[in-house]
Amino acid sequence: MGKKAVFFDIDGTLINIMKQRPQMTARTRQAIRSLRCAGHRTFIASGRPLVYLDPELTEQDLFDGYVLMNGAAVFVDGSCIYEQPLPRQSVKDIVALCEAHAVEYVLQGARQVCLRPEFHGLEEFYRSIGVHVDRFTRSYRLEDVQACKMEFLAFEEEGGGVFGRLLAMPGLTGLMDPYHKKNMELYASDISKGSGILKVLAHLGIPVRDSIAFGDGLNDIEMMQTVGTGVAMGNAQPEVKAIARYEVPSVDEDGVAWGIEHIILGGVD
Image 1 (cartoon, helix red, strand yellow):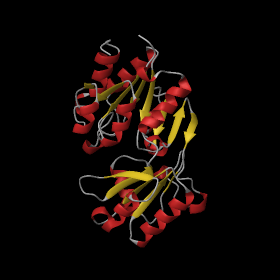
Image 2: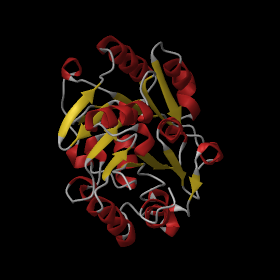
Image 3: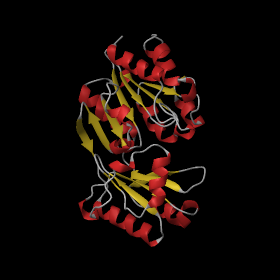
């Protein structure tokens, strides 16, 4: 079996923040270590920036790199091999619109996340999902920030129309929380987890056919369409399951570990 590059979404794939389980199970950690011991390369592919990652994802011997902020920043073996900040003027326009309509925002960069100290709604939200807010930069000058991605919290559905206006800005795309429609993320329309994965594969010289991705959410669709083998979690959105080659048990049933043991190391793939 040739060397594979295996990419993992975080939320709903490795962990379940909806059930207050912000860390992987012992079985999942061991399965990922077994992959690496077999000579495969392992990566996180997430909408999160580096600062949001739990220490177990960055400080243990689990991952060789990270495709972050839906492809806006890519790290391999400790080095940032790609970064695509949003245009500064676009960021200024977004900030002005949000501040005029009481929408909270956070600026996410390759190694820094900036959140105004008075944005208590976002601070509470991040704490509720296990993100270490103490790592955020709370005092900054907007002109000094390179933001690759932004996230928003509104206090009325769709920000009272603000989210729609943001999504209509040229060169930008994003996702709005489909349930309460008060959270949204925004990033460049020409990037995705799939484009970030291609940068990793090119950097390492690994053919696309030897890449595998595990995911569950709508922002995993592009990476499923990019890699050689897509693996959908049992709890994945129907659109993700429709394009994946395999479906494994849910995140609460150690689906990633099952997939590693049966599909990759078990030789099914």
